[in-house]
Length: 389
Ligand SMILES: Cc1ncc(COP(=O)(O)O)c(C=O)c1O
Image 1 (cartoon, helix red, strand yellow):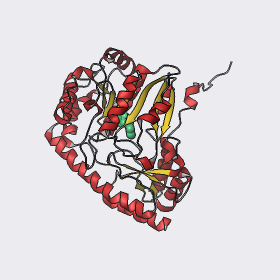
Image 2 (cartoon, rainbow, N blue to C red):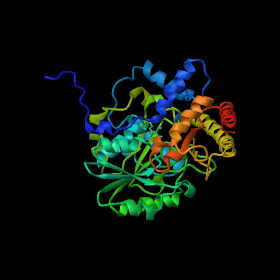
Image 3 (cartoon, rainbow, N blue to C red):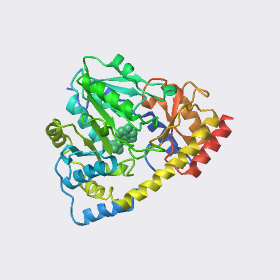
Image 4 (cartoon, rainbow, N blue to C red):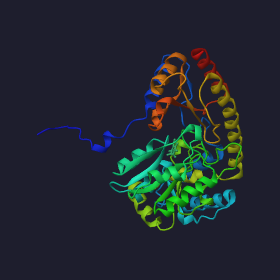
């Protein structure tokens, strides 16, 4: 009898690691050896959680609020999210449709688990957030990437969508603002895509995790155009709470009971202390802190985009959301992974290779995250300049 055999399911072999993790490990090793690394690869805000949220979390702990909440989340928090949609976006979303989840990650898994079965197709943009295709694989579905062009501002037209949509397609996943492009889908395009998917009997899943991190335009939600979409959101990015592991989802009517059952079984509930802390996320005091930080992201973007263009990176359109610049590195290399490693070794600047976000022209692109201070970004650009020139 064989003992201690590691038996892995087939799906595990198809779930790839983030290539950037390898780069991050190397960067950490360099730092351990005393090298000063400029981090432009990290997809989370450098700011800490606003103080009112931390205080609310501490109070909850001190008061012993440490037990499970209902699977769909703390009722007060569901109400608070519902109020936020009303006051900031002018949309009425009943608290009953709001599900509190362990991060947007938990929300994505729940939405897909509710809809995807073996052989079902889920369409998604290429480039896009890498975990989406892995979630679909986990559920024995098939992820299909739709290639988008940087020169067209990563626009997905309804014609292109129609070419990809099939009998077996059950959902289309979009993100706005998007990772890795920082692109925002204009409201009329979003509405047109939502209408098509509804007409074809599928569901739109819109990841709005970077909502609020928008520059020079108003923040929006697909809920202003459709009540049929699954909307994914999170306290991670705009609210600077990555490590608290808290997000939410707006579920279309008709899915609430199924999502409740799935949430009970998969997670039991989102972290309780984080939920109490998040009650302070929508207060005027916290929102004022977040607005200052948003303005700081604008300054960083406005510095970084022209600086990268001057160096020879290709940026067709100025990204107007999230905290990423997805730039063509074609001028320097046709292998973005090798290029990212060379840049790290020679300049101690860490960036993310495009291959982490899909296949289409992925070897020609790299992602810069402006999740570090202006001074550090300037230092990074200086180092790149001496290496590249
Ligand atoms: C587009 C997108 N969706 C979801 C997530 C997962 O976020 P969370 O921390 O809320 O699980 C990320 C994280 O980077 C992301 O970029």
